Length: 111
Length: 119
Image (cartoon, rainbow over all chains, first blue to last red; front, top):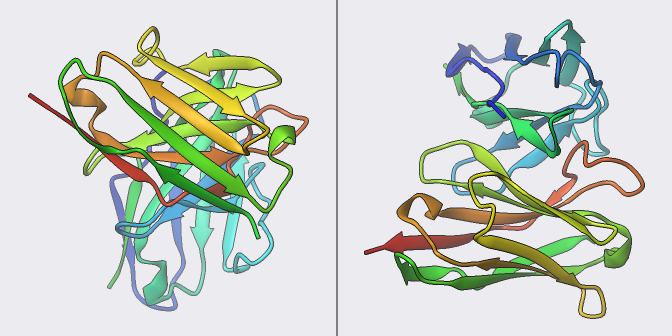
């Protein structure tokens, strides 16, 4: 299956809010409320930030929030901090396979 | 504390084989679906294999070449990789999914092991 579409890069100043989009199809993002988001710092393993579209695992800052409308899911980071600079990937369950699909990834830069 | 520790990566020639292992601790390993996810240098994430309730699934890119298995008595996940190609060069992560449901997300990841395929 094809990767979900994310913008290659998003940037913002400290304290600002940014939103990363993740666009899929009627077979994945548009059908299931099973979108997750991962943060990955260079040389590190991905870390779960959001699951089931908008739920935060224990320990994840409430500055991170998720939503979905139609075929597009979004991750919003409010009160942007230097430590938020990382790559972010969305993922969704899909009807075409038990294996889900990841997004193309977005590099977040804190100016 | 949940821990996943991969091992077995390294340099292998094109057409060669390698077996990766992922030692799990801190949770009831046998109750959870486990997966392998890889990341080629400078690229995005790709879900490679999934194993749960005795069933296994592989991405089309590795079908017929890679085999995922687990030994619940040893709390260990494996990935047997045969007929390796240059495009299999990547960091391979093992990842844990939630139980009693489709793998909607990965709540824990290992630190990864690098596989380099070269002629």
